Length: 406
Image 1: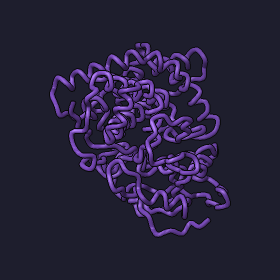
Image 2: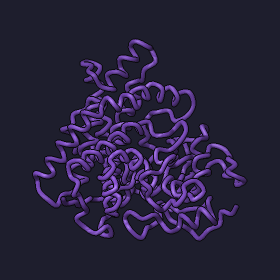
Image 3: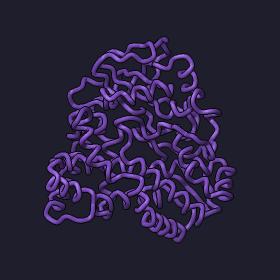
């Protein structure tokens, strides 16, 4: 298996805002372990085959880069983005017993059963947001009217954070996740503000606990002796708020655009709403922009990947979207089959580092789709698909706006 390929640069460009890069298929067939150049000028290794991506994600020895790693930088010198600057890392252990303990403590609050209990409240909020969008008139930006506020209200409710601060959360999250919009100084300032804000919130929860995740984690440390430190609580709250609203907000917009891009998909769901669950899974699989850079893993030692030895010190970019279109796993991978089952996509990763909030994200996406189908059956894109614009520099991928009418 050769790693030689014409020099590729991440993120790989696409022909259209919802289209996968044409290079993915060639890479999977000819060079599934490819050397890629990053905006910083550093190089990394890109994986595009399903079995390769899953094998690395399932390897418990490796996690995303930490402050101690000499990993490949994404952002150019002077650019921001906490996810690309290790000196602003959050103090959560990423490997070993510490990581397992953190997931064990937090995982109980994100079970499918708990998310089912939250579903009626999510539905009421989604309906209210859709009603407000309709009242404001058409066309509307569905991302701004529904995609962004719904996940913010939900995650703020779970954390006990004031939803009125959502604009500040949005700015801080963007500064964390965007690799070219902010300077390093701006990102560091946002990081400091966010940590200060969450430190105050943790202090408030210690003094006046309520029915929220932070309060329950604090209480657990008192009663079980296995809780999190204040720094870990702050890091957890920041991580949950960023991941719990930014990624889902972008996915709501992309999901709606993908389903409306071909009207037969929307009509199929109107005719059979029981397909919502499998449709959401297929949208997650088909999303060509789960993140322009994929999931990063830093190799702390050599790793044999199907006969190719990746040396320790390599920064690997696991192309989730590329792997989700692997012909060896998904028949007709470029076709969006709303009935596809089973659907073992990797949109939420795999293994010990898989997305902790995937049940929450799935529930929010399902609720959003159910409400839109019921309240706005005539929904359609207000611009041609080709005019949709991706958010540049955002590591989680998204559309700037999703203009719709009804």
